[in-house]
Amino acid sequence: MIGQGRRISSADRSGAPAVEIEDVVKLYAGPPAALDHVSLNCAPGRFVVLLGPSGSGKTTLLRSVAGIERITAGRIQVGGTLVADGRLHLPPERRDLAMVFQDYALWPHMTTAQNVAYALRRRHLESDQARRRTAAMLERVGLGGLAHRYPSELSGGEQQRVALARALVANTGLLLFDEPLSNLDADLRERLRVEIATLVREFGPTVLYITHDQSEAFALADEIGILQGGRLVQLGTPEIIYRDPGSAFVARFTGLAGEIPVHAGAAAANGLVSVAVAGTTLPARMPHPLPVGAPAQMMVRPSAGSLCSPSSTMTHLQGQVRDVAFRGRGYEHVVDLVDGSRLHSLFSEVRWSRGAHVGVALDPEGCLVLRDDPVDRDVRPRASRALAAPASTVDESVLEVIR
Image (cartoon, rainbow, N blue to C red; front, side, top):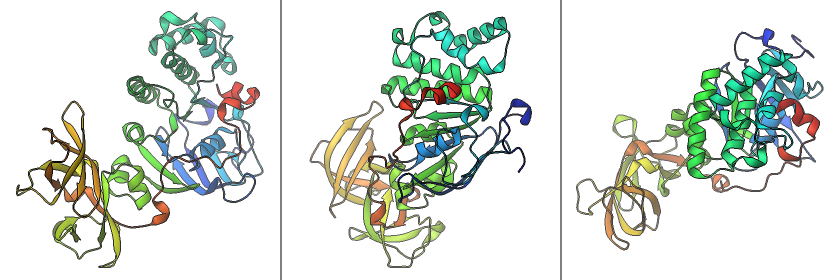
C-alpha cells in the first residue's frame, strides 16, 4: 500500500491533503455500530461539516480520522497515505493534523504564547523563528496583547482563539474541529464563526468540522454530511441539502416551519405536484418520486411561509395566531391551521396579535413533499451510544500531539 506506515509530512502533499474514508465501521461493546459503513471523500482544501444530532456518530468519525479512536473495519487515507484499516493504526502524531476541541484543551500552566508555540515543537524551528511565527499568529487572531496571560486569565472566547491560533500556526494540511463554538454565547459564537471561516480559508487546509447547529453548518460549509444513527445519509453542498433533502430526517434536521399530512399528488406545471391540504389544492415540490395517493408529509421551510389577510388573493391556508415574537427585522408567528397542523417562524413585517385569524401564503419551492417515515421523526439530541471518553478526558499523551 502506498505510504503505508509512514508519517504524513508537508513533503507528501502539494497543498492540503485529501481525506478518504471508505466503508468505515466502529463498534464499541457491540451492535448497534457507532459508525455503520461510512464512506466520505474530502477533496483537498474543502471545508466539510458533519451535521447530526447527538449519538449520530459525527464525533466518533472525527476522532477516528484524528487517530484517537481505532476503527473496527474499513479504511482511512490522508493525503494518499493509509492511516487506518482496522489492523493498521497510525497514531495522531504521524497524521500531520491539528484539532480544535470543544473545551479548548489548553495547557493551564502555559501562557497564551507558550500554548501556541507548543504546536511548533515538531517543526524543529529555530527559537527566534518560532517566537516570530507565534507572535504573528497571535496578532492575526487579535491576541497580541495577551501573549503572557494564562488560560485562567482569559475569557471563553479568548481561549478558543488561542486554540484556533495553535491549530493554524503549525500550518498542517488537515484541521479538525470538534464543536468549537458550542460553549460560547450567541453573539460571540457568531463573531468567532466568521473568524474561523476567514482564517481557515486564508490558510487553505482541508477541514472536517462537526456541529449539531444547522445555521452554523450552512454558514461554514463547502459541503455538508448528514449523519443519522452512525450512517452518512446525505452529502452535498448546503444548497442541495436544503433544497433537495434526501429524506424526511434530513429535512427535519435542517430546519422546518412545520409539517402538514398530505397524500402525494399528480404532476403539475413547472415540475411541481398538486397536493390536497385543508380542503384546497396547493402546488409543492417532490424531491423524490412517490406514487399518486401515497401518504406523505408536506414539509414547509421557514422561508416558504408568510402571513397575510385571510381575504388576500395570496392566501393558501388559514389559521389562528398562537404566539408572536419580535425579531428586529419584523415578527415571527406561530399559527395553528384549521386542519390542526401548526406552523412556526412565519414572518411578517407587521405584528399579528395572538388569537387573530390570518392567511398563510406559501412558496411552493419551499414546500417539500416527502415520504413520511416515523423512524425519522425524533431528531432531538439524545445520549451518545459511544462508550469512549470525551475529548477532554482523553489521555494527555494523545492530546499532546494534536493540540
